Length: 552
Image (tube, rainbow, N blue to C red; front, side):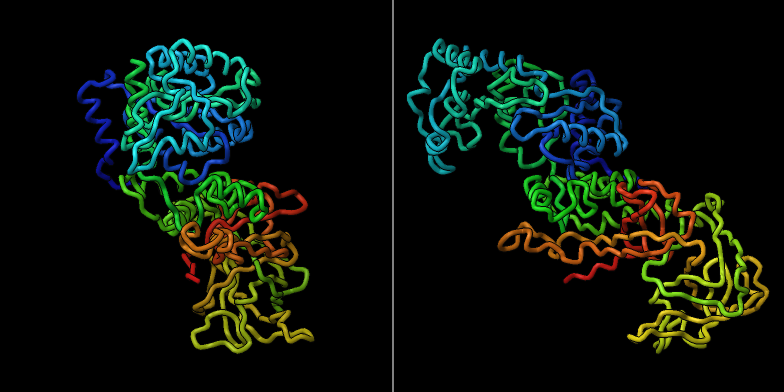
């Protein structure tokens, strides 16, 4: 977006900190994903915010993986996250992991035990939950809360040494069981998990909880502005309590509204269900809101950055219309996508007065929206062409400016033709349309003096390549599937994917590459699917030319 915009509230905070000389005017942010799934469009907003802040104020951003739960994490997710951040156009200062700090975090925990601010608890999860009380009733302490510092140090060391099974003991902070903030009622700091970690192997069998690891990791890295989403507001007092009691670098947490997008789900758990239960073709299915899914569908980094810029940074949750995301990709592809002709639902057009065996080559601009057209390509022409079935009507209504007997149209970049007749099969389906052409009407050198109101696209039968085309639409048929009654999967749109097994493209499209956007003239924006082979090209529709969504 080129127009100037006012500062968002986080930028105002950063500018105030710089004016006051806080942290010597330094800005260091971080993007801290947990590697337990693929990133989605909501993460893109966070990426653009964290990296954008650092870029705007001459700072840097760390990429830090919150890998404190070995059961759910995988190197596959780490690699996909790095690919997504790079693809969006950002470069991190350091690649870090919470597991880099396991020794330091353990030392921090020991320090809190020494201060009498942490204790080992043998209670079951159910007992701990009951002892925490309710939002209107204070919690109650148990006998373990009064263990001596020496006993707690010994037990915590034994937990680390692997003496106890999973769930036998936890380490809890000793704060305030009557606090109105449930997160301050002696929260868990460590739990026992005898699980193999993707980086530390079997070195550890105790792992820090998110609330203990996160603020301390920020402090170790001396993060100046720790930006997260609104659901972490109740966690902030605990974040600050750990930092204060440990006397470490005073990182500060700031919260903004996460992205909620209609006609989809953003929960990693629900996205994983869609993948595991085969409702979609993996994390990068083009209907998924994952960054890899959007990339495979043909979305561009520029369009996603533009979208994140347009929705802004707010303090209140709201639902964003997916139509805005579609608008952003149309805007970008209109300027960057090369124009090509493809016939998705073909019938044959025969130009009866065009010599058999004759071929011509016409020229078409790659992108008429750009000055100079970004070059051109050759378009073969012959007596027999493929056209769209919808471009011919046996009994046309008024103001139908395409082909019907007696009507004339221009073939894009070629000649004006006049429909003389048609042929049907035994089932009454039109299989061929017969036309004559106006030889003097050649595009670029039209001396016929004839004006026609309709122009249609076509592909030469002799030169056409056969491809599969996948028409993607919104994955859900309701605006907010998570809020509907029953299972969210009951609201999947049955028309979210329509496969056309035999479409025809002009030969230049055989050289298409994944990631490059093409406008199929009059049909929409498309990109080559990553799983295409030389023998079978597959094109995915990124978005239609106009917003044609009809609420069901």
